[in-house]
Image 1 (tube, helix red, strand yellow):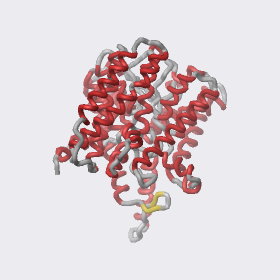
Image 2 (cartoon, rainbow, N blue to C red):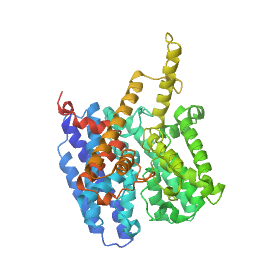
Image 3 (cartoon, rainbow, N blue to C red):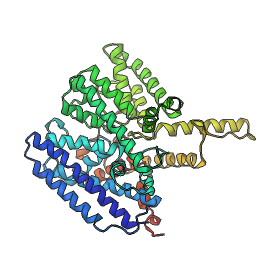
Image 4 (cartoon, rainbow, N blue to C red):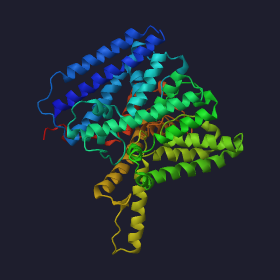
Length: 478
């Protein structure tokens, strides 16, 4: 373990965050809120902490695999701590625990909130709250890798630890260039959504905030009525389509730019992602047809919420409690599945579903033909045993952690339904209650709030980077 390099990297990332505080500062000045001093103090305090941690450059700059996991987890905690400063300094949230929860929820793109009346927020706070989703969507460390002038080849460990999914590949030979490509695609889609929202008549400031949520698949509401406030089929479809696009593996967009259309078309995860979307939309639309104004409205509402929940975004246009239990159960299953690996979405990921389905089919064939060998392939390539083994291990740990977290919350202060809802929303990074059990996060104890913060970070980083901090062997030098 290279402890000095770990501390130095955390310090450099905090320095980047100190610059990002200048964006809401400009918003504050533009709207003449009188909070510019608070934002400047946030920036300077974070800069000072970052400088202090990175003051002494390490002699040994190499990063080992476990170093990448440790850096990612500690950076996300550090960013959440400093990101809570604005809520407290502006008086939006008085307690550190509530401010920390709000920041973690934004950075992990969960969308659970301590704030009941979002329309009463200052524009700069509303901007920062939405911007944290954008920061966490693709990952602040991926952003850092994209702008750092010199990136060690071992930094690929950081990319693997932060980008969701069982497999992460370099698009080009240089890891820094890979990060630049990923963020260029990310920002390009973000800007394109803003343009489409403006064409639909949405205010520029609100179109930016909504696009922050769609890009990061976070879903923080900027209106008390959520997206239903706009009452526009066009705007709803723009948000739904772009939300769905941000759930696609970003490597496929790069392949499209290279005109490798056949490779994209034959991608098995993308095919299943499309199939799940279409089938779920069709089934739910038929189920809610009797309570909708007509077939068009039923399919519109169905697609919007399938897209929103499958990508772990959480935007909504209707009260889902009015839907049947059958329709909500389908949405709950989608919460578990999630979207594609290498996207900004959370959940188990469609590619793991592909691997599990292929593994189950292989076992059935072995029962019929025990002496034959049936290799598992993905996109025409043989899957390595490490990928299959890792998928099984992740699903086992995910299930155990889900049950453990739910049990802890139920033992503390929540009933079983609320404990299930809070765990499902936090571990899958989608702050939406679907099957009942609405959780008042602001009323929870300090322990439960902090525990949910841990669950949200675990969900965003796919559990292992957080768990590795608890292993004694992690902190040994050799």
